[in-house]
Length: 389
Image 1: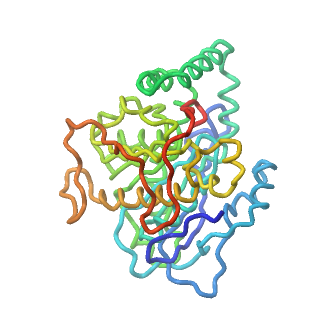
Image 2: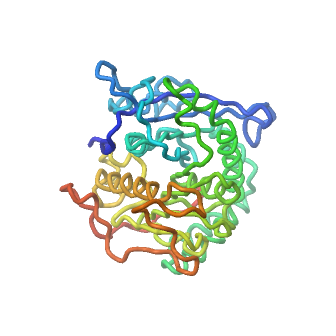
């Protein structure tokens, strides 16, 4: 099953960068100096008729640290992209806020390539960040967890899964507060994001063409799973942030995020619907894709059909969910391209009054109207908001 194609008018270019923060250790449990970050950039590019687009998740094919199973999966997929490595920046690049993308707990920068390509084709520069020592960090933190702590976490997660929607929203607060190791990871990755923002000119300097055209001091944040918590945490204390999009992520390390009024889009799977409602900013807009589970918002859902057979994803059509996700995110960013406190552009929807509760549509959301596929009604089982989100 192919990934959704970009919907914007621009071709897409890509480059990769690495940055190292010498003032922090390699990971939270290491004494080695230097925290290394891998960056994948997508941007609007000039058409490249003779160029060859890169393979999907190409950077994973050449890394020695890529787990063998994942390397075999990537080689077996044999999927291409519409991203042209090193293509020149489009001369007519619009002045849209760049997007910083945050991946799941243990994942890789390009996990949601179709979303990044779509946003770049519409004129955004998209930067996805990856902490290269993330797996060692997680394993080190887990080794420090006592048996009693692990047992308590399992019991709370089991109670959460059995609870009805109202109780789950209340239990989620306890679940996030108890996940101390995930919170530490979120806080450290928030520092990664600020490190990248502080060096934005250096980050985009590698884009061929007039990199000055994409310099910026205002940014959108998008995160999937734990990445949603990271994006929320950064926006909590950084005035450079225009908006946040949280793709089904629990709010670990972000329990006070509601204090900052900012345009916020919470996209739930039907399995996790409502879990953050007691913690979201009053300005939040909530959307739920019917018939989905947590993994439906990862590109892999459309690439591996067997995931539906083992119910790792919901009954909704995976490609249709991704198309809806991409369109919903793009439209939200278009509507909130100005800093908080400025008047919205003509045709853009403003922030709702702070007294209003989070908005959620009552009917199942449909994919793009010109498609034949549909996102079916409910039927997904309860998902997990545990430390793996």
